[in-house]
Length: 417
Image (cartoon, rainbow, N blue to C red; front, side, top):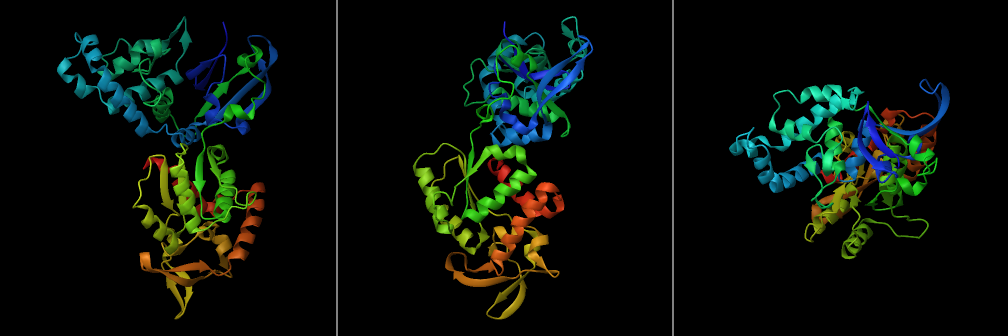
C-alpha cells in the first residue's frame, strides 16, 4: 500500500506525498533533522522517531524565495476563478444567486476561508473517520468561499486542494505550494511545522538520513561587483539565516580567477541574459556613484522577468558620514555615492575610538553627476570582519549584524516587487 509522509501543523497533515519525500524537503535543511528514541505509550516500548521541524516563519521565507508568494497565490486563484465560474454557477445555482458569484468568489474571501479551516484543522480531533470541529462547520450558514473550501476537506478530494482544482492546471500557473503559503498565514511565526518520516523509512522508501540531493532547490544567482561582496553576504547568511543558504549561489572569484568590478558585473549580467539562463538572477551593485551609473545604463536594455537589478540599500548612518576631500574633512550623505559593502560590516567595526572610519572622495562620475568615494581603511575593516565572523560562530550578537540583516532581507524580497 505504501506510506504517506507530510507536513503537519498541529494535528493535521496539510501537504503530503506517497512513498517519497518528493519536494517536501525544499523547506528544510539537514540541521532541521532529529532522530531520537521516544517512549510510545500505546506500544508500551521505546521507538526511534525520525522527523524534520521548522518554523512557520522560516517556511514562509523559503517559499517566498522559491516564488510561492501570496501574490503568486492570488494570481493562481484569479486564473482558477476565470476558468471555473461556469462550473460554480451550475454547482451552486440553488444556493447562491449566480449574479453574485463573481462578487462573492474573491481572492480575499477565499484566503479568509482557507485560513479559517486551516486553523480549525490544526487543533481538531480526528475520531471515527471525521474531524469533529470541521464536520460541525458543514451545518453552519457558510459563505460561498467557505462552502467551496469546506467541500474539498479534510482530505483534498479529487485533486482539489482547499478549493483549488489542480487537475486541469499547468504547473506554470501554480502549485499546491502557493496555496500552502496562504495556509501558513493562519498560524503564528513561531509555530512548528513537522515532517515525520519514521514510517517512510521503516517501509524502505527512503534512507534514514536523506542525501543532500533530496534538499536541492533551484538557486538564485547573486552577481556582485567582487569577491568581497559575495563573501560578506555569504558569511552573514550562514550566521543569520542558515536555512536560506541553499537557495543562493555566487560567482567563485578565487578558484576560477574571475575578475570583478562594476563594469565586469554588467558584462556578466548581459552574458547570463544573452545565454537565456533560467535561474533567477540578482545583479547587486554597490550603492555608490559607479554602481548607480551602471544601473542607469542597464535601463536601456530589456530585462527578463527572472532578473532583478538592485543596489545595496541606503543606510541611516550613511546620511551623516565623515568624508575627506580636496577641501578637507566634512560630514556628508554617502548613500548613492560611497556606500559599498564595507558599510554593512557593522558599526562595531567601522568605528575606531568612537569615530567612523572616513570615506575619501576620488573620481567624478559624469553619468550621475557625483563623486565616487571609498572607505580609507578598507583592508583593516575587512580583517576585523573576518574576526567578527569567527566570534559570531560561537556567540551571535544580533545587534552587531543590523546592516547585514537589512541587506539580506532586501535580497530575499527581490522578486516580491
